[in-house]
Amino acid sequence: MEIRRATTVDELAAAEHLFDHPVRPEWARRFLDTQGHHLFLAHEEGEGPVAFVSGVETVHPDKGAEMFLYELAVAEPYRRRGTARALIRTLAALARERGCYGMWVGVDTGNDVALATYRSAGGKDDGTCTVMTWDFS
Image (cartoon, rainbow, N blue to C red; front, top):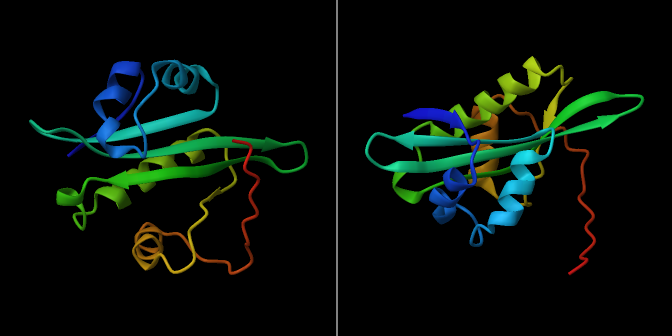
């Protein structure tokens, strides 16, 4: 497995099967051009992209920068092989490199597979978070 940062719209389009919806070129370009947005693809030899992790740096005047692990996906045949853990560790290494004081992710209640994955990559549940959402669509 090789992990590489996505830098082109074509790379994101090639990973479209891993996303929730089709890649829209204008959104892909905006993502790639926006400072602090990161996406890494895991490639298996001869297979193309089999997994991804995306992260967004958030900065606050009194806290500095932290990395928000936005999304993680691994194609079914490549699960339970350490791919997700390797992607998470790659994003965490980038966060440290960029001076982030930490990294966080929101996980759906009862998503035991995701919780186990994040724990295996060194994450800890601090038990203090509830996610509130606003839908603008």
